[in-house]
Amino acid sequence: MKEKQDKLKIGIVPKIVLYTDEVPYHDIYSYVNMYIKRVDEADAIPIGLVLNDGNIIKEQLDLCDAFIIPGGTKIEHALYQILEYAYEHHKPVLGICMGMQVMSIYSVLHDKGVNAFDREGFKKTYYEVKDDNPVLNLLEDNSMHAHYITRDNINETKHEITIDKDSFLHDVYNQDKRNVVSLHSAYINRVGSILNITAHASDGLIEGVENIDLLWIGVQYHPEIDEDDKLIYKFIKEIEGRK
Image 1 (cartoon, rainbow, N blue to C red):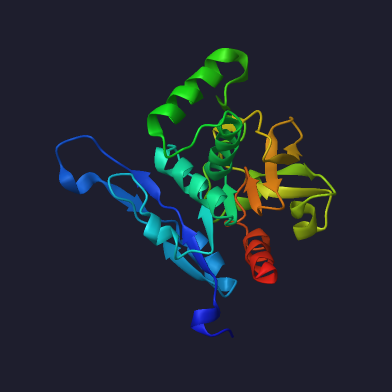
Image 2 (cartoon, rainbow, N blue to C red):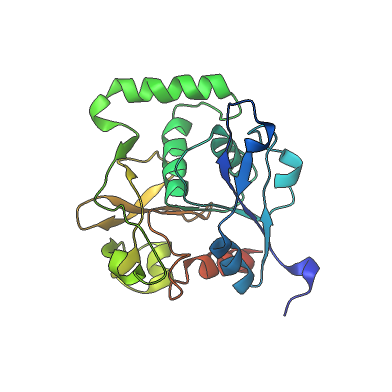
């Protein structure tokens, strides 16, 4: 067991619910316990990140060695800012489901030279990219992989993905194909130059992206739900090995 001061500190991004009504207590940040559990199992310290009116607190991010951006239903701009910070400070990121989608969108806009801390410029560039080719939207709807997951039907939600041999994901699983827990209603159809696509579903949807040098790993599926999936564990151990 490592001493507390030697343990990695993994910042876990919350699900952000910012309401616009008059009730002040409706601005809520929530966390899925399974992410916390997986980080603790890897003998690292999970840190729940908080925001200020949807804006990041950079001093808090300085405390973290890496970040996990989990699944969710709404992409808030603060998620792009966390990625901008991680890129500038060379900190690893694991994006899961919506987290992978955020990473992919960020990578496309990064190629345009826009910085996420420039909110208006980032937003303007996002819509310019979409309008350039409406057929290739950055984020598209898809119901084929949407499921309602309970503790009793996890295996029924799985589908097979194909993993590139020369990838971090392949090193994690040591498999060309793997059945993964699927739960998403949108998907990414492209990435920018700082990411490589390393896994696909049988219908061609992107299931994995990564930058091995930055140790940015994104997956469309949910490894935190599957107790046999060691991606989060291996992600943290890889960070330890690079220290």
